[in-house]
Length: 402
Ligand code: ADP
Ligand code: ASP
Ligand code: MG
Image 1 (cartoon, rainbow, N blue to C red):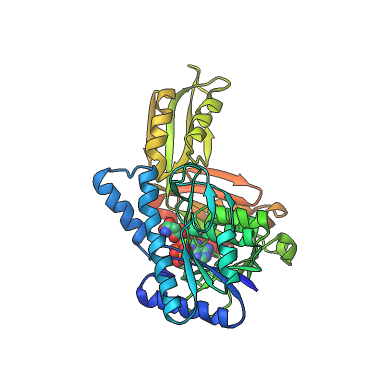
Image 2: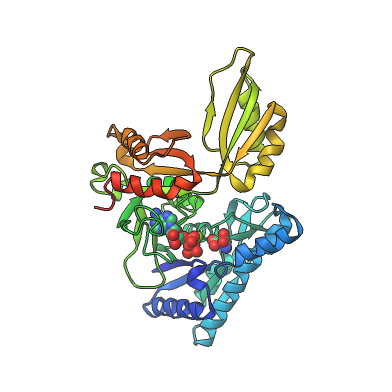
């Protein structure tokens, strides 16, 4: 089998851990597999590098200096793991994103992968080597290094697995798989044996960082066999797969609950209430690559204006401010909110799912500030201090701990 394995920050957090990963890779190699290993920066390194940048510029710039800085973390780990494997007598080679042939577009700090030329990887595999690749990065058409957004090593792994048509892509992390909610928030959360790509995509997009959302989107598109599991034990993980491989899917109404603490609410006051205004505002935000999520427009007022509310990731607040200020008499930003999301494909065919959420939150005295829904998801904005309480209450209300 050709297996792509990805090891996240905690899995390679110390030299001892990198040694453990090397042993695990060798176990798989000895079993007769070809191995491509994608690694993250050692845990805490990426955050540390961002703090270094913020020593000089309060809100770290989102430009190519940041790409240069952040890509270094993954390069260190890939080189160290390759050194460890070679020292144990297993020929290995480390490759940067460029070396692995990953070409991206030019958007700094959240570049998109355009293509992968697997020539170097193929050659090394043919020579019997274990290929170790620095995750989270590529190179743009100007030959400059780019990074793929936070959690982007997952995306590197899936993209490489897709390009190589690997038999399996394993994402190794510090939990046994995908749970009904973050086990750090709700210790009674249950590990899922399987989850569909669409449900996982919603959970990941709504804050369950066990997998980066773009990696799930790509896995679905390329039909990559994706498994998340722990690098700290040999327990079976969670398979992320197509709906056709799920049984009894419709019987399970809710699969999981996610909490996103990285949201900020923007309130624009006295926005001109005429056709085309929203189109202009949200196009301007999209042009700046700002990820707008929930949108609420209030009923128009007599003076021909209205109030417009929406949410953006907290680190995009400054860019959003610069874009929207000219469209409103005043703009307020509130980072003291979180988004709680309930996800499940069974929602399509079951009614009353939303009302359970609303009455559960009411019983806890939690005020709902914004709501949005899709076919398989309900998202609710609440005050930050109630976020974890809301997750636990909803987890119980939907009997996910049973
Ligand atoms: P890595 O460094 O390996 O990429 P991450 O920290 O990015 O790991 O993701 C793993 C973490 O995701 C877990 O430690 C857990 O706290 C969190 N998490 C959030 N939601 C879930 C969920 N539904 N299932 C499992 N883990 C989750
Ligand atoms: N090191 C990067 C981050 O912390 C990428 C990753 O770990 O996937 O976001
Ligand atoms: Mg991660």
